[in-house]
Length: 128
Image (tube, rainbow, N blue to C red):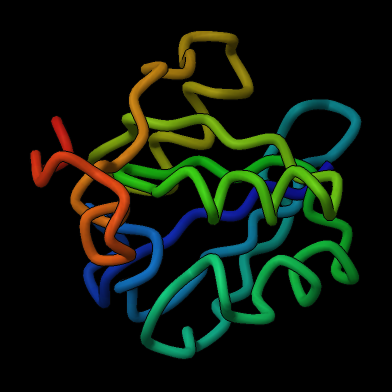
C-alpha cells in the first residue's frame, strides 16, 4: 500500500493540498510498517488542474491524507483511484502510523476557500 501526504519542508501536513511544497509517498508493508518514504516536489498551484493525481496513481498511491483540499482536487484524485482523507494535521510519519492503526477518519469538510478561488464558494476558509 502507498499513502501520499502533502507536506512542508518540516514534514508537517500542509494546510492546503494545492499549495504544498512536496508530497511524501509512504510505502507500507504487509506487516503494516513504513518501509520506504519518497518525496516528490510539488508543482505549485491549483491541485485540481495539476497532473499530480496521475503521477501518484502511477506510483501505486491509493490513499491521500490531506489537511485542506477542495472538491475539485478530491474528484480528480478519486477518478485516479485515490481515496482522500480530509482534515489531517501534524507530523506526516506519525499520521501514517495513526492511519495504519485505524485511528484516522475523514473530517467530511472540503476547503471552500479554494472553491471561492474558482468563483464557486462562499468565501469561508478551511477548518483545520
